[in-house]
Length: 98
Image (cartoon, rainbow, N blue to C red; front, side):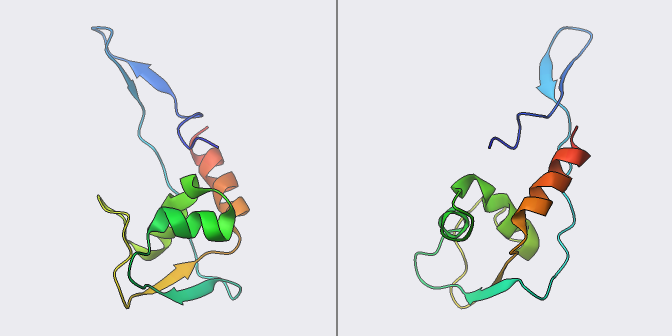
């Protein structure tokens, strides 16, 4: 799954192409979310692979925890929420960006 595949490509008057702004869903806390404590060498993409089977879904964990801006490492000792219902989050992302 490529999170940019459904993002519209826009052209300027001069013909320059760019992708339109990406919209991300708000990820609400749910009772079935998983919580972990970040340890040495934890990375958001590796956690996404471990819990979702797809490292490209790292942005869900980053968005849910307000981390990952420029760095995929998880701060040591930080509680990290892993949203369990990632499929509905991806579905909402696709709706927002269709």
